[in-house]
Length: 99
Image (cartoon, rainbow, N blue to C red):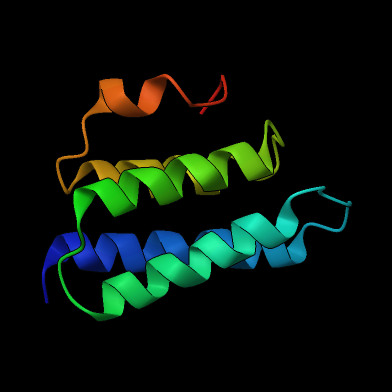
């Protein structure tokens, strides 16, 4: 298995687990959960399109906001997405501070 896919799958699992365990209300929790599910489908189909990865990552980051309890999982997801060559600069413009 491609180590990038393994890293992405691990990051998705962690963030989904972290989000499930986060008890506070998040206005856009459903958006984050939907994008995580979409990324899981993309990963199951092999090496993903970098545009789709970047878009999903930005939507997840925007949906979760700056929740410090979820930041490590979002950071891990971001690092996994960057393994596919999604430019750091392209992500930065829509990224919450601290991630």
